[in-house]
Length: 121
Image (tube, rainbow, N blue to C red; front, side, top):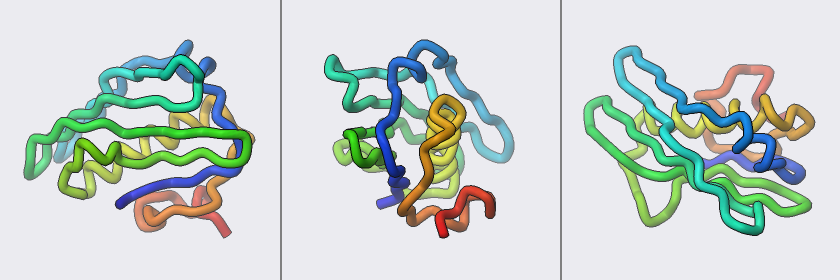
């Protein structure tokens, strides 16, 4: 399952305040439509549509606590792991990074999809 783990806690309030839908159109379409935040500000779901060789609608789940944060596919919406689906996770990672620049990746299985300066040592 594709995932990205950060060291530290995500400030979801900052992200939700600045959130706007993301649409990337190239050979495929990636649309991050909405962000849903739980009442304790410990998890968020991002509603995603990807159209490439498949038309898929799914959620990306982001969990956070004081020590670490994780971006992953929501297990109940199990899309085929195409490059566009992986790119959607990267786009959400970049959204988090813009709003929480102090967070650094500690673990991921998406190295081939990240730029060299984003890959953990």
